[in-house]
Picture 1 (cartoon, rainbow, N blue to C red):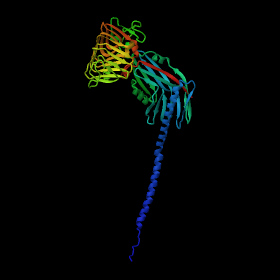
Picture 2: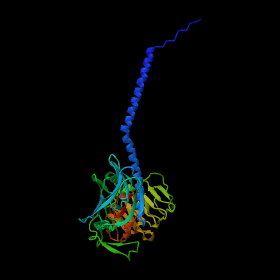
Picture 3: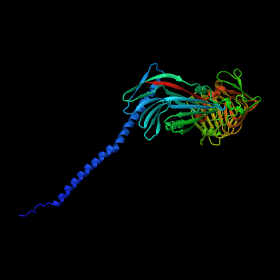
Picture 4: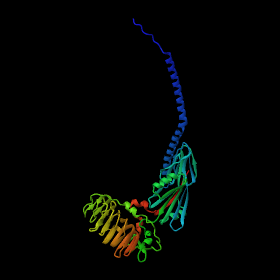
Length: 504
């Protein structure tokens, strides 16, 4: 019988293992304790930040609801209301928490100033906040940064500016969950000084808008995004923008010293209400418009930037064809074509270096469904009849020489001269033997209207010499211009008023 060896146990190994387990437990409890301490010490601000950010976001949403109620209150005879829930912080209205000051320099040497103090609504907790200013919602975070959550009640197109100055008229200081605010519209107010600025067309000068607010960073970013003038931040609580003001693009004021005829009197009429012989009057360019407005609002470079040129084979149909919606390119002349936009806009993009003319056969533009654009990077020659029928304009952009001669006429439906527009960026232009209805904008050109020509509409040029007949159409002050030029144009119209709101 084979004898088995007896079992043995190494006592020293067991002691070492027991010691390791004990040490492991101690380390585990220590790490757990340290981890819990870290959560308590470090995690508390994180939890607080999350809770505060949630309150900020909730306040933003509730301010948006409040904004909608305020906008609707003007149409509601009775009071309306909105609920705001606060876990921390409070909401207040201070009647003088914001200022909006306007200074208008019309070039006469005397400024007109209108100072407006507004009550603003603000939620604050420590150094964070949400404000309702001028119909916009603005947020301030712990690091001091401010952002726009929703834009103010302000519309800027380049040519016009409208501002609704929301003014909370009574102090409010509330806190707590389920706070309900009652909203009452108290009417509209405009001071005499502000009325002096907003009443009537703006002349050549500058409008300065100075906004006093604690949210300067957000306001500055917003105004810059809008392209609203020259924006600066002169101090931590103030943002300022300066906007060039002046007449609309085709206004008679731009003639001034640029205009030259026998008596320096420009005959002006309004094509919306009658013809030249029945409704004409004169503007004395020596007195009423005595000085030259310089520079003109749209420059040669602006026109060059508008011109689109594409190389490629001709895609325009043969002469005498009907051209429908779409983009066309090539170096063809436009003789005899009928451009029909009933199905949409038409663009003709001439090849680089290609001259384009309407020379041998009349051209008809039917613009009932959209505009027509003709982009000519080189020369454009018009010496054949043109007919424009419809409600949308024909715009021709010329990079080099423009020729208007040879006994033809430009006819626009209903005498609406805004329907045919030529923008020429270079060279002098001679209007010779032409009966023309429309506009010619040539900021660097000397334009001469010869003795056997009649021009109804508007010529804006570096110089205009009239030997024939020139009738300036006052209705062109309202003419639509290419969208790309809007932000280049001076501010022609400005409207602002306080809208009084009471919160209870």
